[in-house]
Image 1 (spheres, helix red, strand yellow):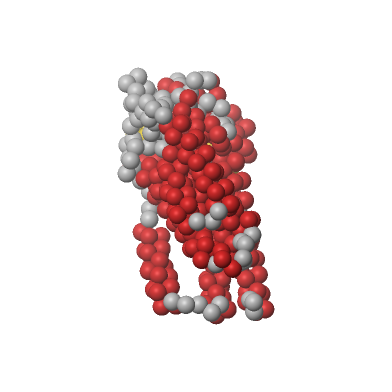
Image 2 (cartoon, rainbow, N blue to C red):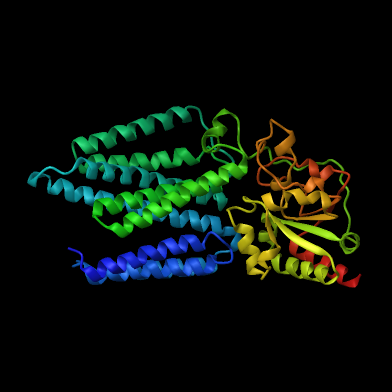
Amino acid sequence: MTPTWAQIAYLVAAVCFILALKGLSSPKTARTGNLIGAVGAVLACVTVFFAVDLDHEVPMLAAIAVGSVAGVVGAQRVQMTQMPQLVALFNGVGGGAAALVALLELHEVVALSGFGDVPKFDLAAIAFTILVGSVSFAGSLVTFAKLQELMTTRPVLFPGLPVAFGGSLLAGIGLSVLLVVDPSLWVGVVLALLGLALGVLLVLPVGGADVPIVISLLNAFTGLTVAAGGYVLGNTLLLVAGTLVGAAGTLLTKLMATAMGRSVLNILFGALKGGSTLGAGEASDRPVRSAGPEDIAILLGYASRVIVIPGYGLAVAQAQHTLRELVDVLGEKGISVEYAIHPVAGRMPGHMNVLLAEAQVPYEQLKEMDDINGEFKQTDVVLVVGANDVVNPAAKTTPGAPIYGMPILNADEARQIVFMKRSMRPGFAGIENELLFDPKTTLLFGDAKETMGKLLAAVKAI
């Protein structure tokens, strides 16, 4: 029986998780929300050690110490551009841990099966946790490898992949039913191995900008397995925390898919019928209009309104601080400047918000796509920094394009467009951007940080 004080501590931890999730819904409160969630997690772990009669405390404390050190060092060293990979890795570990706990519980169930019947719903929860947790673990590792470019980011297809996936899924369902009817440890192990294969087969066909959406989906899977594990263990806190993560991950997946203008099923299996967010990826040799920092500075200096569209290239170059200084200088000259934030700019939702917050950009200057899209027609200059797919008109004009149907920022409606690009290579979706060849567009080539510094100096000199 759990002591009353421990139940109260678990309740406080659950409230912390809810408040943390609420805090993460806004850039202004995200840092505070993250800290509240961490406090809740620490409280839950400490409560377990004092409320439960545990065995093997020393190995457990050693494992916690090793994991804590690895987590702190990894979080401190990771670059902002690598944050999605870190999220994928941490998510995969959570799914794998849930699957291992379910296997251990299955071992206990099998050992005690001679003392009475085990509730079928408990066995169903164990089977679900083993299968889905394994899928999340293996799938998250593949997404990590894709984003880290340890393997190709393009969809990986091979003859018979749909048959292999469908057959594995049916086999997984069949083994889950067998586990409920006749509990057996070997069935659980085979189910876990099958889940690992399913996770790999699920993510291999996904390419391009779809990978972060799959990370969110797998995060929802992990949350659901943790919730199911909480039910099996009789731990209400795990049930609450897992349900929160599962619900939040599901909602985020839906919102990201909507932002891409596609369904979740199309994102997962679109490549099997020729659709993907990753195109050929070839650089164009068509002529474009380009200029130097001094010319662009004059264009910005004589504008009355400027909208900045940041993208992944800004994060890679770590030019956010110089960009903020440029915006400040333009503001001092009486020019109105705002940032237009696309929901899937960068590699994960909120990527640009976090990046710009790191540079102390006022939240009031950050405008979401739906709030600012109607204002481009009244804008003198749009400055696109390291973004490509989120302003590509092909999403509206080219039905055959892999990003067709994705809502974009209406940069093409501005009076002048300035594109800061390292080269003519396409964006993450791998398709050519016709906006680069628009008569209103001027390209400023070079590394974003170096070029931004030159542009800043030129603007100051006006």
